[in-house]
Length: 215
Image (cartoon, rainbow, N blue to C red; front, top):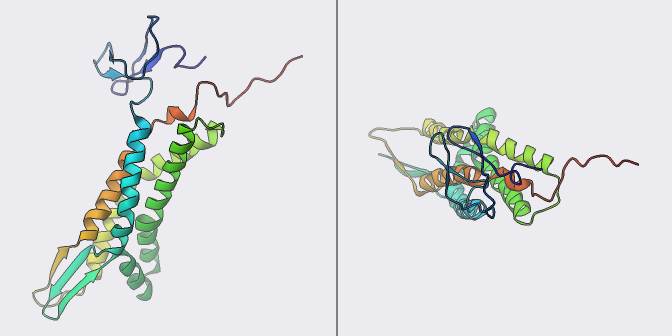
């Protein structure tokens, strides 16, 4: 028997585990309050998959403009110039700063797309009640969560590109449209990860550790 069948509720605010003892039908949208802090209790995050898919779709749509549109526009007496993330990676590589180029590539190109792909796989298998074993999928989710702690590393991409700008007399720097798209991708992937309920990876009817046969 799992926690869902035992009608156990874990409070996301204070951590108290409560048990519902009435014989009502299980409903993830039931309005139940934590007896200690009053926080709403749910056995599953309401509309978890819908919210996750919405955030992932929006992040995927913004991923291309975030990397192709200029994130910085510089102006000086010599004219105006725009800087994209991909262009900044190329400039760093040509300048011999291979380590910085690799950091920028991983933070702004590889991590967001891998995070979107991984969360899409987890949401798809959870939605289909897939029989894919829950342990490796749980490990994938934990990996996404661990990477999520470093999501704001992408912000340093802007700092690196600013350092590349060769400021002349009366030089100024302006944010480009790619900067907004880039920040939106980071926020949306974080929201998608927070919206996804990892308990959906363990359907009630799936036993990932079956008992050995006897007889």
